[in-house]
Picture 1: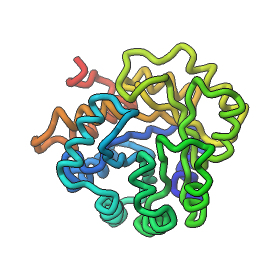
Picture 2: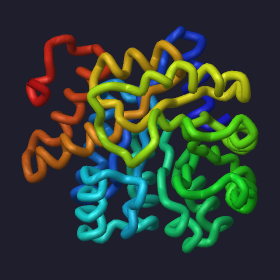
Picture 3: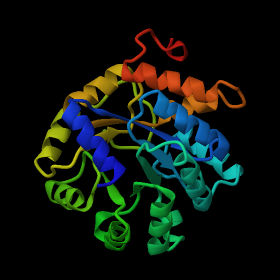
Picture 4: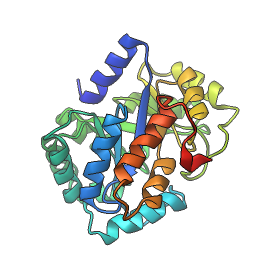
Length: 271
């Protein structure tokens, strides 16, 4: 099993749910990303998503688009992110999922990318704009080196399409909480409960819910139905707010503690 599989197995045995933070690798640079990742783990992150910056981030809102611009400006590449993973592995075994648009992955050559990613210490890859109908070469390349292939499923997906996506994904199924681009929300969709319960009919894999989760009460609401909550834009915004400041990584850690309910007083940045 991958580290992702092992993490969900352990959490299930302990009766707990996962907290999965996302950050854009290389924002503002890869050295800062290393420091932030380690702070995230110390704050209680269970799995970490490393975003690959791409020049045409069509599924992302303005916060992550700006992070992508900063990461690209700092020279971040897929190869650089794999070097970052190797550095993380010198001191951490936290499960790591690479989240990317398909083009940067395809440009590497899928078998070569999969081998390098596995050797570096990644646990899985999610190609956000890859359709399940065109995914077999990707899935084959990942499975050949025991990497998880994680797929997104939308609330607008038909049961037939959910069945196909659930059959292709490994590690966990990533449920998009709403239609539209990434970004923090004040409230979760009223249809979320029914959406997750319907997904349970199609898969035994853990289900993670992401897009629009930005407060502790939303994390708890997701945990009532799903196995994991994914938080992205709120964390990326905190990084943006702390650019150039020595406490950037520590501040991200404090945000995660607040969202996970470890630190109960209101987050000062949310007042």
